[in-house]
Amino acid sequence: GEHPDDEIGKAFVSHLQNLCSFARQHARPNLASATLERMRRFLELRLSVDESDLTKKITSMKINLETARIMQCNGDTTAAVRTCKLIISSIDKLSNGDTEELAYLRGETLLQCGTWLIKHKIDAAAIVLNRFLKRAAEQARDIYKKEQSDKSTKLLAS
Image 1 (cartoon, rainbow, N blue to C red):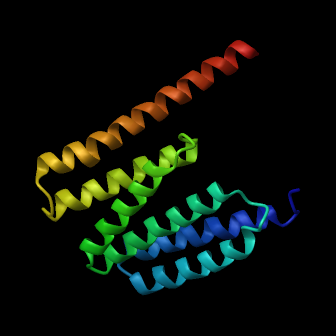
Image 2 (image 1 turned 180 degrees about the horizontal axis):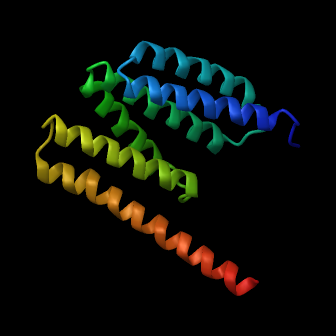
Image 3 (image 1 turned 90 degrees about the vertical axis):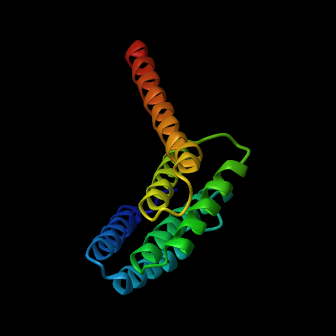
């Protein structure tokens, strides 16, 4: 069951995510790293044995994406791109179809990776376009279509 402190826990994680993002955007990778590490430890304690394997995997991949962003902020674009490619590969290997959360994470990771690859001219533009940016756009389209479908289903049900 839900604990009364779940709302506090969610607010704390949200606060740490915002602080981590803010630190990165202001070129403070050490603060971002420390914040992310605190969030990771908190989530490890919070994700009890009751949580599904999928929830644990998604949480781990989200932390890895933020880690990649911190690597890039630190100037290690190669490691950041490698981490994003591993996240994308992990999502693609999950056989239980796309949950909404996985779809968002895949789209976000594809777009982030593609953006870095173009900005730093790591891979040929055609490769980046086809492997990352086009897939990110398709993922966004699929999410949008599903949301529209869900809205019309709710309207018909009411």
